[in-house]
Image (cartoon, rainbow over all chains, first blue to last red; front, side):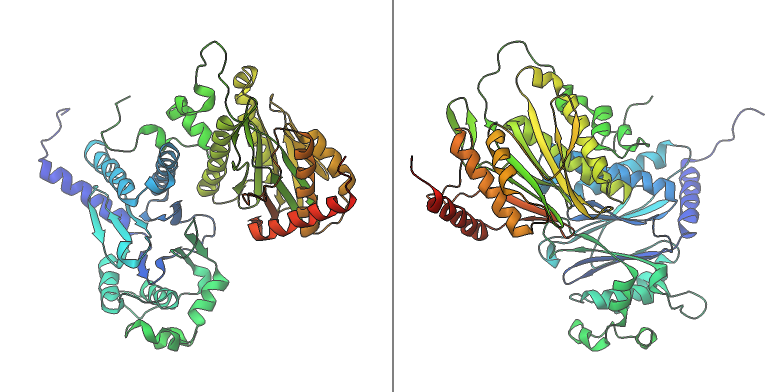
Length: 250
Length: 273
């Protein structure tokens, strides 16, 4: 009776992955979108204090979905990693790639050695001097890293949202256009009509490459309302995607 | 305890319960902290010393200014060192004493405030920042007893009260809130005498900048370790205002004009003897 049944490694890993995926799928989605002057992050989050999107360093930000206590711990570790590295070397030596690698090792180690994988999915993004040098890394519960370009969706309906973003995102969109696209996308549902999200239900932040040192900036509800209420014609230069009748009325 | 997995974030990075970078360093690697180092016995060779810092309050904020000279014994070690820094968006810190240690202290202090802000998502109160700085100085008491003292002056805009405030410190970590104006460093006696006569309540920002420059000029006049404005090389003091809109360093062009004004006052009044 006390002898455990044999479980094949394949089955063990599959069970863990399923467990982590289920946990992540329960949460609200986060979308990350590159725009002409930086990178925008958006999620549905009515809390003003418990953030899913945060600043890590001067040009680096962090966004996560999943269990709050687990990704909060990773966030704090990331801030410490970045601050220690910047203190030991120089502020310019702190990179998103280094942080993404450290996170990947941490997630991978927990996935294979601990009794339970971390139920989180993370994006680490760094804004560069030009859109071509922006970096967006997406990290999964098992430590796998993907180098993303332009747009990422993670969380509950990641696949569905990614498809919508792929259709409508284009390089060189401006901030108002990507925020509108992000809000539309977050309101999308697989079954049923799209919801319209109010600025107070959203947590939106940007890494703005035009800011001098610390590029991270949160967009509060009034600023969001301004951006969402902006007339659609100012996005004409941004390409075909962003104009959507659903948001122009609100 | 199992050892940390290679490449993964060390266990100390995941420690909960502190928002302080210093506490984190103390747990992770104390040798990186100034307080964690063992000093060998013996005399410390001559090292650059930073000198005079003045600060004064005005209507809506505080101004802090420092001269640009560092001395090593009788030599001028630097004529363009900077000794006034933004501690964070709403505060400034000026340093007098052993330059190398003081600059390290400033770097750690800036990081401490930013680290707290990032982890907590909110700013420390002005008193909280001053207390933090006092703790850091107290930790360096051993260095001070070897003659490597660092004496900062801290000023900032108190967002809760809506006024500019400033704090002075002693080497034992004593923290004293100063009213109206204060100065630290070798030329501080002369600067304080100057400020006593030139400061008045309710002055505006440009009056305060001029008064600060005037005080530094008076200090440089009588203290060999304080450098006056260098019109030949166009090296001006570092002057910064901290108000509700944050830390702002006064531009060189504006300082050049202020220095010319102060010189004109002295030229008119002054008797070369």
